[in-house]
Length: 126
Image (cartoon, rainbow, N blue to C red; front, top):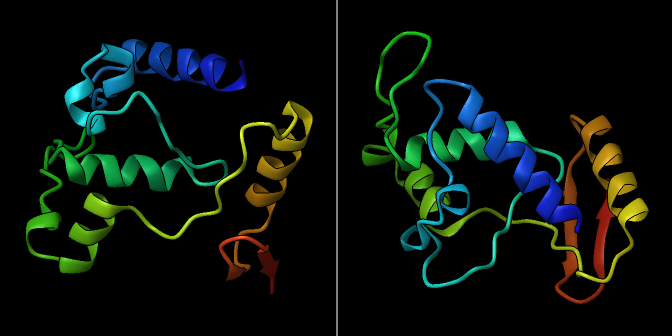
């Protein structure tokens, strides 16, 4: 429910804002989702997510008309765009209020770093 509502708002925003790149889940173009109907996104870094998308699609900037084509020249960026970045993944059964709390907390923690202790134990904030 939470994810569907957020995706609906994002699709509406994309439709209302000229010049933004498409989202495969809004256009029902599943070729971009590597054979999956799952969608993974960030709770606390939507600008970062959008920046990776601009580079992945080699989109043209709405500000200066330049093409985001650094992915061809930058191996680290290319890896991030193709394979993703280290992330905290929440289980689907986490209640909506807890997800909201985590999202708001992450948004307030700019400048902090996270170190994953293990894939099963979670993370510690430093």
